[in-house]
Image (cartoon, rainbow, N blue to C red; front, side, top):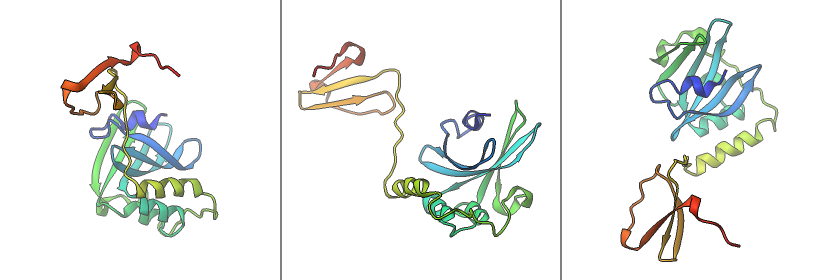
Length: 186
């Protein structure tokens, strides 16, 4: 089961990517996903032969760090940050999703109250470092497009661009060359 492929069929989640798996069995049980500039915490609350159900929430890096440092319970981390939660059901072919207020969530879908990650002191050091770095610096996702250009600006500036960003330059002194026609010289 490829989670990104399933989730990307939901309107607004077309660019979602599986980020960090925090707990897994035969499949990711608790994990983060990134969607543009937002980070989500997802929990697989039912994985059966006929149906899989995930519940997700927009979150932030401080909450994730607190979760991994055993300072915040799993349920509190999940219920924090936003009021709206997303429920995704997948039966192998069809995807049903809904957004509900946290006050209306079926308690059986939530992690048990009072449960922490129970992480060892150094178990999530790498993940905490990643979340801490992301919290300190704004991240940008660059998605290459088919039309890649090398732009030379009077020999003073070289930059690679693609169709994802619309960069404006004074076209009088900019020359475009297809990357396929340029060879690097040492």
